[in-house]
Length: 251
Image (cartoon, rainbow, N blue to C red; front, side, top):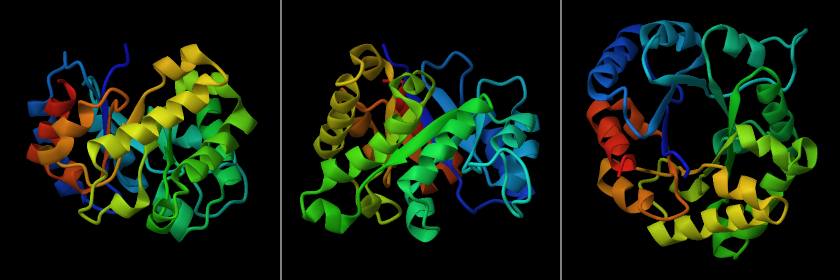
């Protein structure tokens, strides 16, 4: 049985004081024996401080991105090994904002996926379509292309140590949310595509939903058979809201 996962992507938000208050609230509200795993993903500069504050707790720290390179003259880049060194357990790769705003290709995302695993991190691989692509009936083609880039480079066995996240780009930060059935249909497609290569891995890999998840809609989304939790954006910055989403993931 797949264990529910809720990951908070803080994006470019926060400060030392705000992060400390948020983490304190999460520590008070998240039980150590929760049946749902919890990750928080602060900006790079706050990773070490948040990791120290969470040391010894059940809440795990993830990063929002990592370089595809391991070291060298890459000014401004952060290697996956560096993230692991400061306490990260996971890293988001291929987020739609990285793809659209910074021009990251499917092939670059696949390289980042492999770099993360080589450093001992769990990659959270994001896939998803733009609004125009959904309206043109291209959702499955786009998601398949993004997923296949990783499968072709890393192989299906790499998904044993990975988390997938379906994030319809038209629902991120817009207030629009895919219906539970729309989300489950794409999650089912993802699982079926992986099953074409390895049925056991397909049954075990967690697939999260990301796209304007809130406490008000989390229960319905997480009740779907192929939705294993959420990659949460804005709602992860509010302790009460994020804890309510975690509660929804516990069933």
